[in-house]
Amino acid sequence: MKRLLAALGVAFVLAIPATASAHDECVEVSDVVGERKCGRYGSGWSAERGFRFVLGGGLWTSSVSPIGRDFSGKTTEKGPSEYTYAGSQLGLDRVQSFGFDMRMHGFVTPALYLGLDWSMGLGVAKPNEVKTSEGWTLTQRTGLRWMHVKVAPVIGVRIPLGRISLRLETLVGLEIIGLSQYAVDPSGSMKHGNASHVSFLLEPRAAVDLWTGPWSTITVWGSTNALRTSDGSVGLLFSFHATPYDGKFSL
Amino acid sequence: MHARWLLLLLLAACGPSRGYQARSILHEGDIDARAMRTLGCVDVGFGLRFVGNEAPMLRTRFGNRCPEPVVFDLTRVRIVGHSGHSGTDKTRALAFDDPRAEVVTLHLDGVTEGMEKLRLVDDGKAGGALDAICIHVDELVPEAPDTHAGPVCFARPATASPEWQVSEWKVSK
Image (cartoon, rainbow over all chains, first blue to last red; front, side):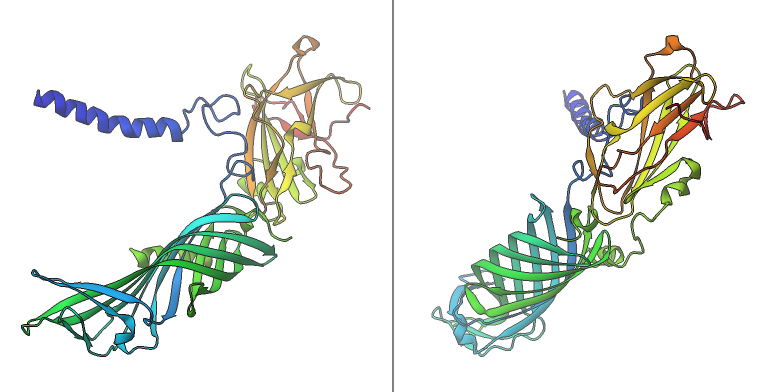
């Protein structure tokens, strides 16, 4: 019975790539149109039979204020460990972070695109000592203890202007801010505590793409959080485009 | 992992590729320069091959010099078979063998090149063996301004070579 199950398992695993292969690759009768089971006429060169998508990655920096954000945290060790505090208790006006940004989007019309943006930045925060209502005392840890993460679907429009394009877009997703501190419980025992604030993100963004080649751009972008207009981000993005000039070079 | 992605993207962003450049379709070496025509933004070149008794196979290479996509319509290409001698020949129309109706009007992406191989259907074999085949491309790129590109003609080779040679065949009016 075990052998039979093992054989079925192996057959199943082998069947997966076989199916994918039949779907994705040519059965090479010949490479003449009409005499092969793939390689549709126009694939690889036509606008209609290609998919316009963009993959990008880059660097960004953000400046956000913890004021008006409620943090909830817990220590990394056993025991009753949860605590909350208001961001204003940190005594920080703004915190700057730097990090990586990853992005992909695809065009649903010649101008409109949908995609996903993920970014993470780290920064140094020097907060005041915080006393929580649960009796914990939170103190500063040195190093990159401030984390700013955004995960958001994105919708935008592109305006082609030759060697540059303008893009206006909005990120609609989640923003996570994390802060790692030392947490001292009422008995005086010190632990590592991680607190975070998660909020809805609505971020309008403006971007200028410079075409460095038909399939590549360097982008400068800037944004603000529509729900906290004092927060802002700027970044530099390097992108690969599956279609030259995204299928439209100028208006 | 992130560093590797970034490096790849940086290489892509600063890559040397400029896309299709004028006359680059000749670089592959399978298109005779005399079989190339330029229609507006588009370079198009042909090669013709017969293997045994099979139908002739037309190799078509094309590239768009411009950054914008352009209409590329192989259905508007007229292919004429000639039998007899140049100038006093009999002609008959040939068509693409396209059983799944794939050959339709499409846009050739900006600075992009492509290649298609198509068999030609010759329904007039009773008219005798073909001595030349001419491809009339004037309407291949409808947007091309004032196109008067001459036909690309291929003549049966003197040797047993399967590759037909570009010819200055005099097309009957």
